Image 1: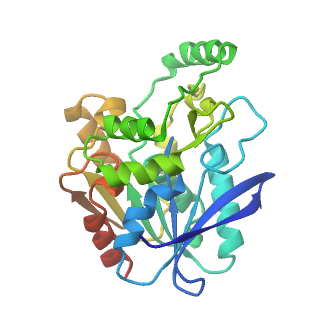
Image 2: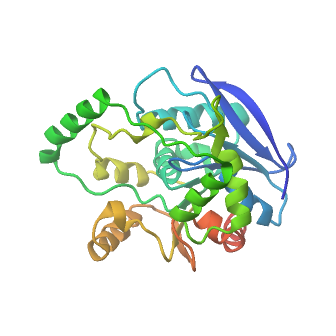
Image 3: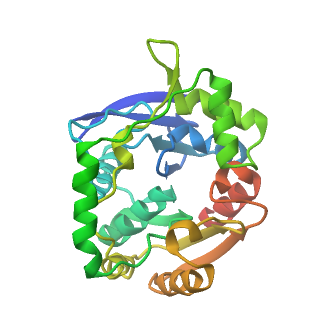
Length: 291
């Protein structure tokens, strides 16, 4: 494994954990993780990169070793604000190569349309967005959010790190034992009672009271100036939140059509966590696109 190093910087009032791989003077490649994940999740892809890169990967607010905000819920635009500050810190002048997975893919693709001059090339890994919503859903969504605020969500604990690894493999049966063992050491930490807790603020699990407005999202995507590599897994489980496969596939393709300069690729024998399942194939795609 390529060794990584940790750094903490101040981002919008939070102590943000930033993980680095590679030499400081190498070309920069920023990677941002998805929901209930951490920056170390990219270790296997970084190990497979053949060129020399300075990979910079933050733990999002409330994940990993980054502070959680003094609030009882999270707002999606804050990820854009955090990303903007991080890029300004490490690359204040030059456009960057930026990669995001899942929730991180949604963040970076919107950001690339909002700040088109800041992006050199963009890689979206399974950042499909959410299901189309209708205004009629708003009253119940607000009510559900208010109900959840009354009884905040909790995370279950585990008796050992091997239990955490088993939990990761239950979610992703393709995850190898050695990779599950590695991820469990970064995805969890032992608490004062000796149990293992997931390094993710339970407040992330609250439903958002704001409906997903897909036309606002695609309006941002239309403004992207950089070339985009859109990567999906052949066994993606996007249908869990996008609806029936046949109609969701049509909607996903419609959304991709709003990106001006995009090429698409599919990773075989991989699920949603494609950077865990097929890091070699993914690293090859990334480097061919960037170089």
